Image 1: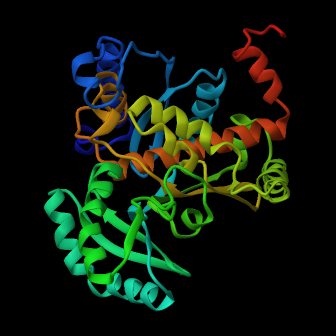
Image 2: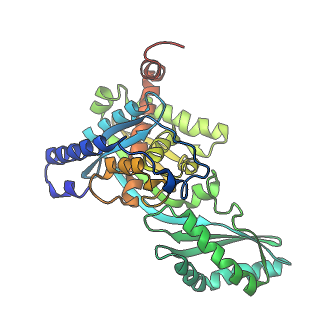
Image 3: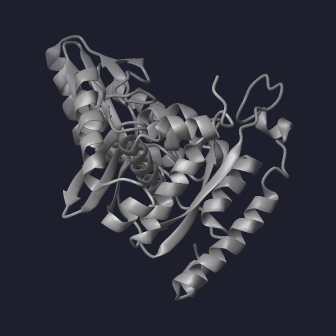
Length: 379
């Protein structure tokens, strides 16, 4: 946050952040949707709006900066759990977060007359990337084609185009640009495009290709929780969390054939997505990832890896008034940046994973949901 970078002490940073949060919270709920505008951009045959409860967790300390987390959810105990994770992370100096841009992908499939023509097409795409890059730039000033991957299967050629879409999530941009490639590709390779999307993207689905090679942004977050904080805040020990993590996130996931070796990435991803105007279908991609844990003396090293985070801070649902204010909870008066949003999401996932595994380790999960999700009453 821009104002936070101007102050020096931890106390001053916290005070500035809390002031900006109060401004954002005053605005939340003050806006309704402009149905005339939204019905031409976001939703056809619009008849109304759906409300979700919005909570705030934090502050979450990442590096030297603090962030509050907007979480839209109907699951009691989720906000409290993430908040506890944020507290534990803050007490040990904060989380470290790293990011790598992969790009938004679109993957058409082409039909050829033989394997010879299929390989001709695959080679042509690689050799003429610059021509396609020029076409892409004509469709948008905020789009850059960075690479292409191909897979030949008999008379079928699957292509996977990667685009840098700047601050936007960019699926529409990638789709429009790929459509512009089709006439040239067909003319130069004697092929026929069967579908603009052949599921080689892979868009809005869990897939090992996205897990292994990434999509959108890859993000990593880590923290080392001291024995003292484990005991006083998380109410457990490193060894207990480690055993739960090993059996739940690794062995249990492997036995189930899961592609998500984590406790509940989707819970946090969904809540932040809804609060900040992301495409909700990409939650399934955001649920991919690994949680790791190690015992260091009596401390706990803890990390998360999200290989497939498809998000943006402009376009789509981010233009909705309430979702803009949701972004404002994170960024305050500063212009939202997608890389920072991705890092904050990874930190939020780190906090949520840590708190849930601690709750399972101490045996408090059912009790917490009884208290916070059912008002202390059984069904």
